[in-house]
Image (cartoon, rainbow over all chains, first blue to last red; front, side):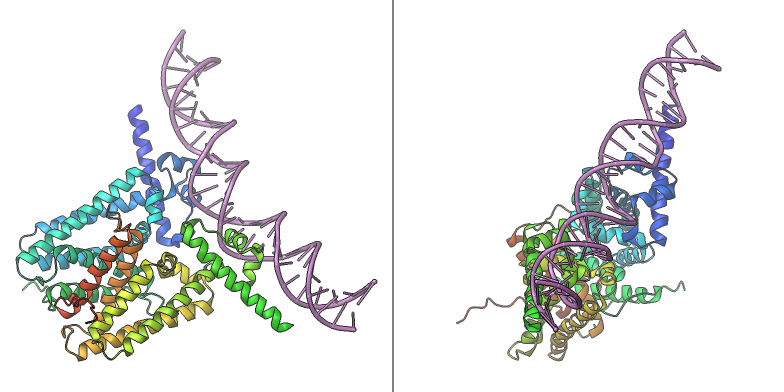
Amino acid sequence: MNDRKAREFSRRERDILDSTLELLAGEHWETLSVDKIARHTGIGKGTVYKHFSCKDDIYACLLFEDCKQMHDAFLAFAQNRSLSGVEQMRSMLLYAFEFHRDNVAHQHMHVHCKQQSFRERISPEYFEKLDAIDGQLTDAFGMAVCKGIEEGDVNPAMSQEMLIAGMSATFEGAMITLQEGGSCKHQQLDTHAQKTEYINQVVDYMLAAITGRLTRPVEQGKS
Amino acid sequence: MNDRKAREFSRRERDILDSTLELLAGEHWETLSVDKIARHTGIGKGTVYKHFSCKDDIYACLLFEDCKQMHDAFLAFAQNRSLSGVEQMRSMLLYAFEFHRDNVAHQHMHVHCKQQSFRERISPEYFEKLDAIDGQLTDAFGMAVCKGIEEGDVNPAMSQEMLIAGMSATFEGAMITLQEGGSCKHQQLDTHAQKTEYINQVVDYMLAAITGRLTRPVEQGKS
DNA sequence: GTTTTTCGTGACCGGCGGTCATAAAATGAC
DNA sequence: GTCATTTTATGACCGCCGGTCACGAAAAAC
């Protein structure tokens, strides 16, 4: 009986998360309220707070799930010995950018979560989980960077610390540009094609920045 | 009489803006409300809305003023013929980063303004002003980039478009990192010294990225 | 002094995130 | 099955937000 209860409780938590994602797909981020989530899940508002101590914890939970998925992909790239360090980096960056391009909800959460105020609001439990997974993602990328350095593809004038700091900044900035459109400019990156072009341009830039040369790979034809 | 009225009205608008800045210096960004601004200015809440059509217009107005100041500085660097293109870029980047480092309110507004929802909320008048000044800032920086290309300091493999896109992304990302601390990591960039070190590192990274070599200038001794 | 116009104001609105007394449902004893 | 007890879901409620507007005081016009 206890078991059954626990399982139902857990299933409902999944329902809340899924409802939130559904609503985020069809609605502006800013207008989503806890009441709407509860209603769409088919439960009362108070019940939501039996599962999450605040609204942002819902987002933190969803963000963590997505980060885990991304981390798995990163590890797979990092352990693929048939790829050079630079190729690993390219794969990771493309994966992360395309993941965000195709998952607007996650994109919102990623940006939202960067805000210090968000990190202060969520419960410590989620804070630590996000902190940990973020470190793991950076580490996985760092492995590829190290490999690139060892293979002599990376400009030796830049320290590894500087590389990570700089590339992280570019990544974050591009993520925001991808979501919000270029600063206040008219260039809006509305369509899928525009976003894809922007992504490729930024990835090329990042790799050219650290290698000193353009390394756009040959098209991945099977022959 | 009409004159006197107009002057008082204008003076009060200045008061609102100054009050907002004062409050932002001593208070968390998220907890600042229109009511507090009005009270601190010594006027009624309704009066604020005689000057600004919504809360975000106040921020937009302040942001625009700061951008204008930054633009003046950028133009001065761009027109300084004793600096090479790369040196112009370094000066602009350092100026912009330090400006934000020392002006937390502006930093908040800069980040806040990147959000699409912010741009949708403010009145068209401010939207266009911000849009224009942003383009002018990019143009001013672009002049330095062009100079760098002509002088042969910039990696010729990268197109100017790619350079601007990539550097803009790095700039935005670094700005956010500077304000919010590194992603969810423990590295927090709390102190002035930590921020300064981060700024120098990122600027070095950006210039190394586009030139292919580290170009940290000799210390600016007068002799 | 009286009327008319202008202009500042704070009570008010709908909606938000979050709480909690209470009703309803599940459980257990017999 | 019945009733007592515990567990659990709930939506009315709270304080606060950004934004509005009828109204009263001050200024202008006469």
